[in-house]
Length: 480
Image 1 (spheres, rainbow, N blue to C red):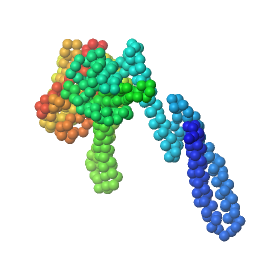
Image 2 (image 1 turned 135 degrees about the horizontal axis):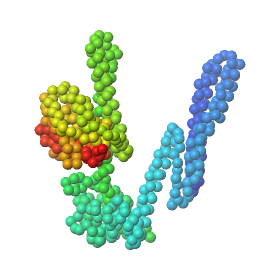
Image 3 (image 1 turned 120 degrees about the vertical axis):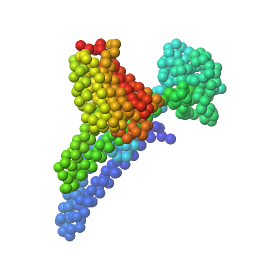
Image 4 (image 1 turned 120 degrees about the horizontal axis):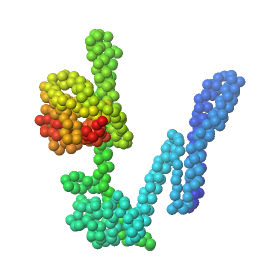
């Protein structure tokens, strides 16, 4: 049986030969197409000249393109030749540029090798930590892991656990680390875990389970790996518990984002396309209709622009780079400008709009544009989710050391179980009346973030079918 290095060399040679064969075959096909017309002519001199020219061009093509063809192959061949004979040695292959199946297959192999290397490193680190579990340094390192780790003997009795395992376990006994020693592992695992899934095999096993904790679903991943003695016999197992709840929530949020973004982008684009096609193809459109169509296109384009701005703000917020440009601002003037922006929307729905202001308002050192956008969002939501003819009030008061902007409506309201979620990204109520109104689910998230950047907050109160109240609170201590 050939050594690993010899096998790698043979594989690399076969790879190079295959690439050369494919390249030469491609050039030969091109040559045949090029000289074909000359071969059909009856003039021997023209036929000979055409064949000679085709051969010369083909040779030049082969020589000029050969380095580019062989470069990925040479890189793969060199890396295969460097494949270590020692199974414990680290092999760090690098991806290559190319579009053929060979390069694509090699790059997939590289990705798999790197993942395997990372898993091996993690296994080695856990193993090293377990070997020195009796010492303080190794015990502290084991406790520093966010994954729960437990060691059991051949009878599945616990020998040691780290602090993460103790905190992740839900059992009837006390949860001090020292109290776990000697207990069966099944007492510390979720009730839905069937140890038969683990006893049936001696290889590493990983399962996912859902656990109900304090009325909420917690997604857990449980893994078991055999622990071998010097002679290679299984003398116990190493168990790891991972709380995958946040990962599941992140995946759900990503799916919700894709659905929301797709809807928010597709709807205005469809309107813009429909009106633009009508304007381009119809000849009997009077001037008033044209103006309406142009206004609709402009409105939908503005809606797209606002949604993209919201996405950019969310990205900055997630990256921690959403910043403020604060200046001394006349709050009375800010409120007047905000009311002028939103009043036409309410007039269109024949809604009663009450504004209540104190006789004197302070000047604050704030980001005027962002605070204005936050107030427009709160007032806009009140108008959107309040039926025609409803009432909306906007009240500004100073309370203690805070300046409060309160928006109250007589709209559809928010269910109690959904009230705590209204500030989450892309959240939209399951109420059918909400889905009839366009929205991205980003406005309240950004409004709350803007308030917190100013040292304030946004508070919500609502009753289903009666209305909602949102309060934007800013500290007066930022005043100038």
